[in-house]
Image (cartoon, rainbow over all chains, first blue to last red; front, side, top):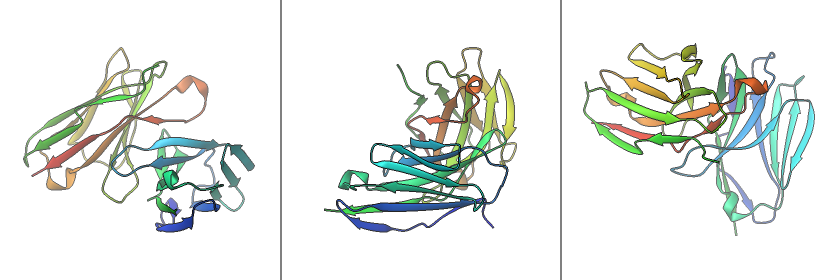
Length: 109
Length: 114
């Protein structure tokens, strides 16, 4: 079992729709959870961090954490073509971040 | 406020050669982590430096080594390059004092080994 798992996609949604990205992790001791956005040919950009169970909202982005189910998700409301990118879920390990393989999101105009 | 910087942007090397990549952390950050990202994969942790010492290391061979300088900048050295070392090398900086693990990436160095 991989430490952090994501569906590789691609996930295709129409413009204006809600995109839902999911991630599961194996280490119950993990305390910090992150979502990065990576455009093709670029480096990852931190867009959300979440540390407590529940929802955290920032603009059109909502991160959801359920530690009991070892599940993290990212919702993108009113998706725009500019949101088309690979979204990486990361979970803290001892002195490092452990990444999933990323989910490719495509927002169609 | 300058973000994380890396140099060079691109690099082409031949098998067996050695390479040095450089990173300057974001202002106010004291910790530097290095990652390797192969095409289509998530970044893989190589090692982390804090207070000029390697604090944590991932599953990479000893051919990968690093250094952190008193100004918190860092170098990643790879010896005896293999074709499989071709990847995007990412430096991420963070601040140990905050108690959080937020890491911010530089633009990366694209290494091609021929």
